Image 1 (cartoon, protein in one colour):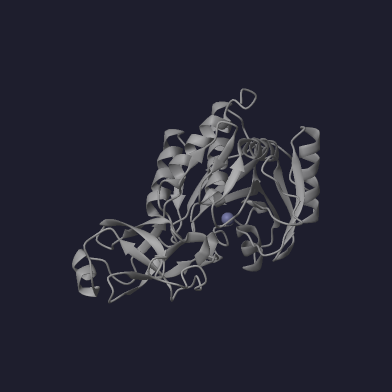
Image 2: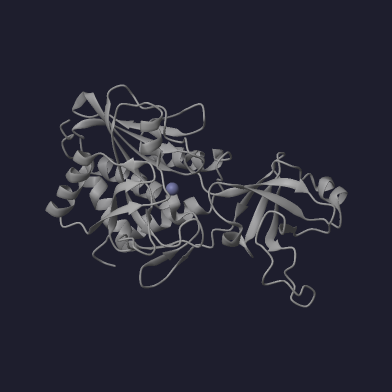
Length: 351
Ligand SMILES: [Zn+2]
């Protein structure tokens, strides 16, 4: 779309990000990628102890800070059991159901650095053999990994170096349609990470001096609840999480606007900041939707919960079928990019 000159770059960045496996607990490679990206922009970064990354752009006002976050960790799994039938039992990382990964190609990452491919299948998959193939429960008991190797028992698997505790990542299957739709696993929340990286790039290219010192936290444990609840400087007043907008029955979020979350499972987001974001959207003709996400919490609510005295907000691109085969549209990326850009240039809300 010619009206969105930079969105093609954002899409390429999303493709690169989703192609680096990074289930919560095993995010070093993707953090390195982000580090390199920021290094090329001459932005200094530092890692926190739990493996997340912080980049800071000094602002005119160094006494009052704001923070934006997006998370690079994704759903994934771990080897729970090396089974005697030559398959692997999984334990899931993050909040999703087994039906969301049935038939998915995966990678098994051993602790020595070897990678094996496989497929996540119901044990009773073959309809030529199992009468109950369609009805059997999609659960830990019945789902297993078929490894692409000649293995018939547990010993064969262990000889490959595969062991309990190895991380398993899912094939993102990223695909861009000609009409702007973006299909991929892990758009939650790598779409937003790409948006924040593009924002930093734009600020650098335009040689903008932001009104306040602004921290960007690329968090790496959001899917398990605590990625962004630390490293909030005492000067930080506003904390904005950029994370996916949830779509479904009764939701107003769509794939063509930025979703501004008014409340989620953790409670309402800061009223003043929400109204400020709406004003920015209205003033700059940014397409937005207000929404409530029923079963959801963010790094911003995690930060509040862990005791930080901050003004918290949540916005993000609308993602269909979240935590499964996700999809969004470049229009949603565009509007989210516009809103974060206007936001970092705006005044902090009064409190
Ligand atoms: Zn997320």
